Image 1 (tube, rainbow, N blue to C red):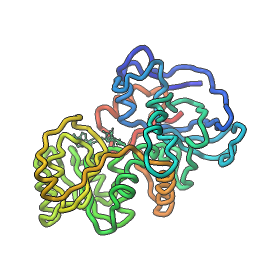
Image 2 (cartoon, protein in one colour):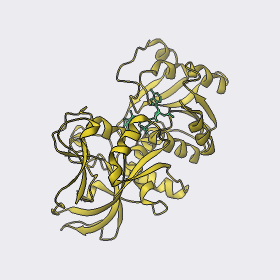
Image 3 (cartoon, rainbow, N blue to C red):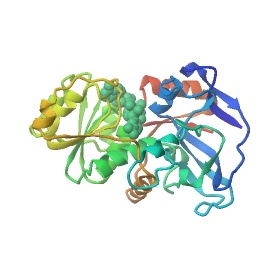
Image 4 (cartoon, helix red, strand yellow):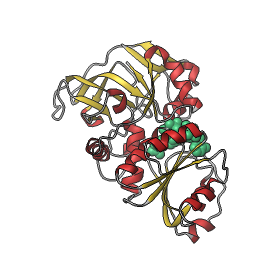
Length: 333
Ligand SMILES: NC(=O)c1ccc[n+]([C@@H]2O[C@H](COP(=O)([O-])OP(=O)(O)OC[C@H]3O[C@@H](n4cnc5c(N)ncnc54)[C@H](OP(=O)(O)O)[C@@H]3O)[C@@H](O)[C@H]2O)c1
């Protein structure tokens, strides 16, 4: 079977489609024929050696397909079920535990970018029936993270305002979820044409952060000087600007570090505004299932920017790396 693997060294040039054996099923496992996968910035980081992953390594955390065989002891899934992978497979519900971080798909263990994957039943979730395979593939990391940040940690309420940074996979799913619950969205991007697309999805206000480097001042103007209730921090390098854009008692959820892992920040604004700053790691299977329920209930259609074929793997990774996309990038098997 074909598999997308990092082999021969780190770097995007070492990502190849290779032929490996179809996995054999163990007790409690399910064999899935993969139909679509989605790329995350995490895959780029792993390919570039950020985790010093041992090689060869099958990449990928997000995959969806159909169950084609079940091992002994499998109780909740059956042949023919449409399923999607759950990234932190040991995190079924409740609080995140240290031990769960030893088994994340594609990070600590082999990934799921293969024609067939054998996974424990707990690492799979049934998919919302209203979505195509390409749309389902967008959910395990970007979708669950957006849901966890907005709903479980951020406790965003109807009528409140959330600030979203950039128009990548996480931000666009967060935009769709926030609008579904009746919140207001201010979204930033470096490109006006992406901001137009965000408006078409329901964004209330948009700001081009390249045209307005002091974009936090625009956020304050747009909120009558009050600031936003919640912000999903994607950059980290510009955290000081996010702090200025917050209302008294607001929450910043640290999702990404697109601007780098370091920042310069005076503690004054955090104290003065009594802000909370909260880190996060995707979410539990229970969170994934709640999100799926909301997707079906509100008929949310995750945005797939481009679908690549398996023979276009290098093109797909380079496309994500350049940040040209709006929403998610998918590869079909
Ligand atoms: N903690 C977690 O659990 C978790 C989960 C998922 C993702 N993440 C992290 O969250 C970040 C975003 O993930 P993603 O999947 O949404 O990425 P993505 O699809 O690659 O989107 C990134 C987009 O953000 C914008 N951007 C780039 N640099 C920026 C900067 N310095 N400041 C503000 N915006 C910037 C660009 O959009 P425009 O072209 O519109 O400007 C870019 O296309 C990544 O760092 C990722 O590793 C963390």
